[in-house]
Image 1 (cartoon, rainbow, N blue to C red):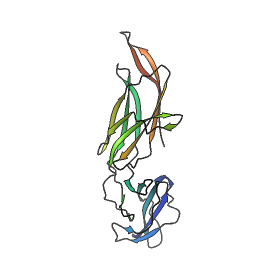
Image 2 (spheres, helix red, strand yellow; image 1 turned 90 degrees about the vertical axis):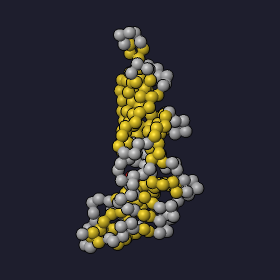
Image 3 (tube, rainbow, N blue to C red; image 1 turned 90 degrees about the horizontal axis):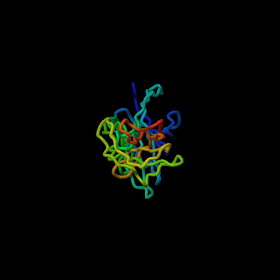
Image 4 (cartoon, one colour; image 1 turned 30 degrees about the vertical axis):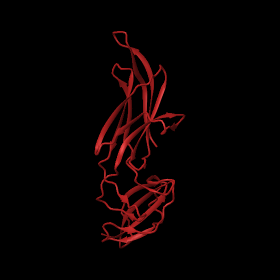
Amino acid sequence: MATGHYIYRVAGGIAALDLSGDYVAAVEREATAPTVASLGHAASTVYGYALRAVASNGQLSSKALVTEVAFDADGTYLGVVPNRPTALRLEPNGTSGELRVTAAVNNAARRNRLDKSGTVTLISTDGSAAASSIQIAPVAFGVSDWDHLLATLDAPAGYAAVSADLTGPYRHGQTVAIAARQINAAGAASSHVTASAVAINVDDTAGRALLGIRATETTGS
C-alpha cells in the first residue's frame, strides 16, 4: 500500500521526465491534492511534473500522474499544455481539386494541473487540458510555420476527428507538408504531428483534372 507520493519536475516537458532520478518533494498519502510551494518557474519554459506513489519499503509505483505546464516570455502562467493530436491525414477532397486535412485528437483523457500561484497541485480527478483550437500550419524544410496558419479548427471536447479543406493550388509532383497542434486560450501549445503527401494530377472519365495523393506519411514530434 502506498504511504506517500514523490513529486518529480523537469524543464522541457513530459518527454524529459526521468522517474528514476531525484524527486523534488515528498507528500503524505492522505494529501489527495498534494501542494508544494515555492519551487519557482522560469520564463519561456515548459515544465513536466509527475506524481508517483511510494510504499513504506521504498517500492515505487510503475505508474505516475503527469502534467505539462507552460510559462511565456514574461513568466506568465499559460496553463496546462493540451494533448497532442493523435493522428493527421491528407487526402483528396472529391473532385474539387482541394486537399482535405483531418486531425484526430483525444481531449477526453484526464490531465492534471498547476495552479496560477506557482505551487504544484497534482490531482487525479481534474478535467482534461482545455484546448481551444487545433492549428494547421505549413511545413518547409522541416520547420513548421505557426505564424502563417492554413486553418484553425475548434477543438472537440472528447475524442474526435475534425477536418478542413486546403485550396492550394497544388501542382503535379508537389510535396505538401503540414503540421497540427492543439493550443489553449492563453497560448500554451502542444507538441505537434506532421503529415506529408505528394500531389498528382489524374483525369476522371469526364476528362476533369483531379487532385490525388501518391504517398502520405504521419509523424509526431
